[in-house]
Image 1: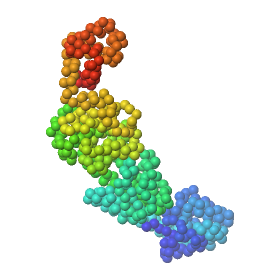
Image 2: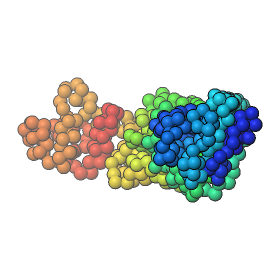
Image 3: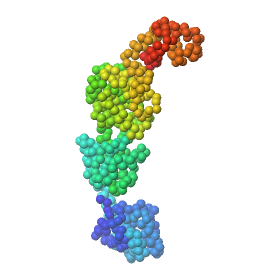
Image 4: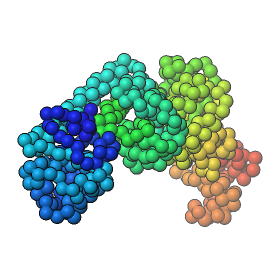
Length: 515
């Protein structure tokens, strides 16, 4: 415990006697140091909280200097003045006594036979004992917090352990988006929602902040994992925290960091398994049996219909934070968590029966203040063997240009690109290309005839031979010859409008790498 003035004055061995400023004895703060000086103004070397011991040598002949000394010591936050009797003056000057009474600055006398070092030793020993007790309390809390983390008591357990050392404060832990994760301690009359509303503007820029809210002092500390904000601890009290309590806060931060890291480790282990599944499926190396096995191990039903959600992650949105938010929404909806990452995007496999889950996810993301995160949704898929096509559909929907950012985009709603998204990864894509363009592709490869390039230019220019021939840098008669050759090879005339959709789809699939 810190040393206060009444305890110092009650030490019979020192023989201190209060001479002035009686009304201020119980209103001054803890004694932080004892300093002796006989200069007319020692305040440039004082920081507040000291006892100033003096014999009055520097001001003994000037009442105005005596009053000014008392005023300056009061202004810099001194706890009291100790006046040594019989060294320079036989009694305390009246000017100093009157000024001390006026300012309620306690002034006590030190007998001639008691050296100043006896007073400073008393103060120094008390400060040492206080610091030792603070360190011992912090070490004790550190051990208890580690035991709580090891026992698996969770965030609430860490806060409960801490509250035993700080019983009159309220501890609140928020995630990076302001969701209350845990709270414990006394009721200070300030709602967590109000605490987060006050803290959130400062979270991004500072790891430590102190502010006043509803008559309380809120001290916050950010818990980071790398560069990303993992959580925020708020300590709410009806007073300023004591110095030793700031050290205790550091211990609870260490415990919370360990507990959060353990939770993230479990999450990350699941994500890595999903990452590997997505990588293999996108590359066409995952068998249906392998996909079903991973889905089952992650708690999903391999026999149930599902959809794939793709969350486009813009710059400024952390990958782990987006994964965590996605997992929390899915878990809150009572669905198995199958969330992973691929090619900078976050993917989730969700049951087709989970109506509105994508919309809930988009709403949760918007509430966190993240801009540019778009949720792409695939078609409903009945079997896991078409997972590659569903992944491409979801990604196509998420990345398709459009004004509806921060919303859910269905692949069916984005036109031709949506149709192609499924075909590009489906097993029927190559068969479709071979059926429509196979002979033309073979002829081009054999004769280097540029028939495909000519057909593409012809369709791109709205079936107008003049602009198409100009782009190809050939004569119109040459383009006509090539179109006739395509008709002969395929049995479909490019100039017949009934085949335009087939030509367009086949060319898009060729451009997508399915030639």
